[in-house]
Amino acid sequence: MLKPELVEAVLGRALKGGADFAEVYAQRSKRRRMKVRSGALEEALSGLDYGAGVRLFFGTEVVYAYTNDLTQEGLLEALETLLRAKAPWARWTRGGGAAWTSARPPPKASTPPRCPTGEGQALPPGKASGSRGRGQDRPRDQGGGGEPSGVGRGGPHRQHRGGLCRGKKVRTRLFVLAVAQDGTEVQTGYAGPGKSVGLELFDLYPPKAVGEKAARQALTNLRAKPAPAGTFPVVVGPGFGGVLFHEAVGHLLETTSVAKKASVLSDKLGEVVASPAVTYIDDGTLPHAFGSTEIDDEGRPTERTVLIAGGVLKSYMVDRLGHLLTGYPMTGSGRRQDYTFAPTSRMRNTFLAPGEARVEDLFAGIAFGLYAKEMGGGQVKPGSGEYNFAVQEGYIVRKGRIEEPVRGAMLVGKGPETLMRVVAVAQDLENAPGMCGSLSGAVPVEVGQPHVLVSEIVVGGRA
Image (tube, one colour):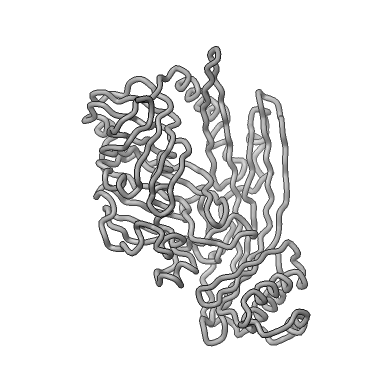
């Protein structure tokens, strides 16, 4: 998107202005969204977004500006705004920028960061086979498609690093909301598969089957009774059940909070923070997963990061600023919604690794408890990991058997305490897509786990 000589001019000016590290991030995104209601097309939207951001480091102080004016004048104006904000490092005046465009560029990088090559395997929008494009019962949400690129360079006598990285992301997601009504009683069901693929998503997840799943859930909730309240053993179902640990624990392991000592899991590397049954992983390399990328939004290769192994904290998720603040090695976890956000450390595809237990064994010893088959949304208190989550589809467990459905259940607790109470993890790992919001905007992620038995969780319901 940007000519190398233009980027070099911006970076060179930034370093001359006193920055220790300078970065340019450019992005172009195409989006398509179609909404179908009762078999009729209700809405069709498409759009193209593009722009660039400039980020400067002065030690551990960071300033960021963005623009959708990708001309030399536009980028230098954004840069000037940053340098003015960091005076007295910036000892120059507005209007002197043009001279730098012809100045000698910064020293060439002696050890540029390793940038992956290749475009991945996803089919871009519009390249699906004929069988994927037919039918009016196929609501679709075509997102991603962005082509971000970034260049970073450290100043003379500092890092002596630089490089150009390019990446392409294609993501597609299908949302289905089903409504069931009986008299005045109305309940809903939901399903929302998504992958880093093109329209072949509809081969992997036929819309009819996805709709039937959502409808079954809505009908189940329609006949369900209010959930009881109390403290019970809880079996959390696979797939999106992983949102419980994503929110209540995952965010506590990002250096966004760890570096500020705002996480109860700060400074606990090598310590036991969970039961021995827990191995928790954040993996940005899973093929076609919703949160996978070849490079992160700081231009670093993504990777598989084991966060907790056998209950012991092994790593945090670390971006560049987190690395500077803590000294922990970067893990390719710098992510942002788009060029209007500076990156921060974020999760990618985060899940509990499979255990050895059989699913039926998790229920066998429960005299009375709850089966949270499908999780819904919730809230988490930053720092402490206190959470409350809605159960989208739940059942009572009696004497080891799954019995009547219940609705309105809420799971309430603290993430670190819940980790310690994981009794057993089954073998049936599933992942599910979602969008995660934090300081750097909303980014696509996956959450996941097998069936998990927690010895006790406070369940909010009808007393």
